[in-house]
Amino acid sequence: MQDLMDDLFEIGGERLGSRLFTGTGKYGDDAVIPEVCAASGSEVITVALRRVDFQAAAGNVMDHIPKTMRLLPNTSGARTADEAVRIARLAKAIGCGSWIKIEVIADNNHLLPDGYATIKATETLAAEGFVVLPYVNADLYVARDLVSAGAAAVMPLGAPIGTNRGLQTREMIRILIEEIDLPIIVDAGLGRPSHACEAMEMGADAVLVNTAIATAADPVGMAKAFGEAVRAGRRGFLAGAGVQRLKADASSPLTGFLEG
Image (tube, rainbow, N blue to C red; front, top):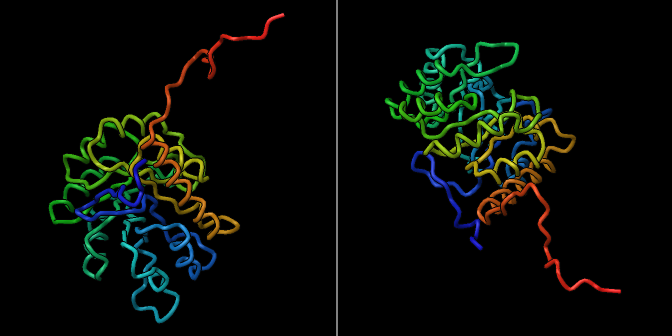
C-alpha cells in the first residue's frame, strides 16, 4: 500500500502533500482560520483580493492566514478578462506571489464562470509568468483551450458556488480527469465530506472547499472531517475500486449447501 506521505502532486513546480485547498470567505470570525488550516491539513488557501485591505490597522483577513500556507489569491469580483488580469497584476505587485486563481463571473443569478473570458485571462497571465489556476464549468472544450493557454491546473465546479449540492457535474468531471493532462481540482459546490471523498475516489487530484467548512456549526471539526475524507478518497483511488456489476455475484462459492 502506497504511503500518502510520498503521494505528492505538483503545481507550478511546487510539490504539495495535501490535496485539500481551503478558503477564507464566509467565516463568522476570521480568527478561526488558523485552527481550520491546522485541522484540515491544507497547504493552500485562497483569498479574494477585494477582501484584502493592506492599509487596515486591524481586521485584515491576511492577518489570520498562517505564514506556512501557500497563498492563492483569486480574482473574485472580476466580470471581464481585463478585470481579472488587472486584479492578478495588483496581487503580484503587493506581494501575494505569482499564483492566481482566475474567476470571471458576469452572471449574478447563478454565478457561473465565463469560459471564454477565463481562457483569455489565462493566456495573458501565463505568458507573464503567473501560475494560473482557472475556475470553470466542467467543459472539455474549455479545459482543452486552458491547457493550450498555459494553465497550471483546471478547477471545474461540482455545483454552483456556495450551494453545497455536491458533484452535480460528476460525469463531466470524469471526462476531464480522463482527457486533461493537468491537475484537476474540483472547486465549488462540495457541501459534505462524502462529496470530497467521492471526487477523490474518481481520480481528481485535489478539491477546494470553502462554504461547507466556513458555514458549518463547527468549522474546525468540519475542516478535520474534510481532510480525512480527502485522504480516504485518495487511498480508495490508489487502491483501485472493484468492477461494478448489474447482476449479483456471490462472495462465496455457490456449492456445499446443506442437504436434507
